[in-house]
Amino acid sequence: MRITEQLLRQRSEHNDGILSELEEVALHQFEIEKIENVDKLCKHLKILLLQNNIIEKIENVQRLKELEYLNLALNNITKIENLGGCESLKKLDLTVNFIDVTDLEESVLNLKDNEKLEDLYLMGNPCTEWDGWRLFVVASLPQLRQLDGKLITPSERIEAARRLSSLKSQLKEKIKEKQAKPQSETSSTAYTTENRKKMYLEMARVSLTPASGRGYVLTSNGDHVHRRRNCRVEMKYMTIV
Image (tube, rainbow, N blue to C red):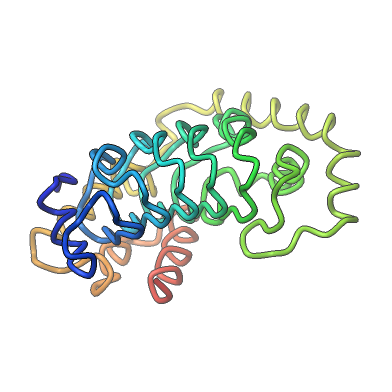
């Protein structure tokens, strides 16, 4: 599904369909593949809920100067980007996406201009398999107050700053390991953007919403550890959204 003017008007009935004054819009579980039109039609948005779709890229939100909360959990995003213009952004939820160590540093750097960002969620992303990911993010984004719902303490900030140089070296090694891994080692049932999209659309075709079935993640035959773990995180998340 596309984000059209008609869809936005339907989702803004509480605001009499006046898009130019809309401050919040919920578009979760709509089979949306691309973010579009919200920055042109809803310039005063403060809350944009896009969780549980199949969005692959963060785009077309740069002009949302008043946006405070962006929820993109349960999507197919591989990199954090194009948020520099969201100068009011306070909370960003990217729970259970596909941000890996290969794009972690660039993703973090792309948030440096978001000076008001206090609350960031990255749990369930492949990058969190690296033990040093949290300290790396804490050291790189001093404006954060919470990461994955856990308060960042002064002692954690000090440790993160002290270890930043070694963490960068570790990250480079992790990236080398990742890039050296043969493509054939990726299982056809692995939790990838392609497989998630396929499962998502299959469930949509049999008229089950992704949330009601929690089912599209249950099709796993359990032969891949990374997928099993992310399925559990995804199911847990869907019980609270």
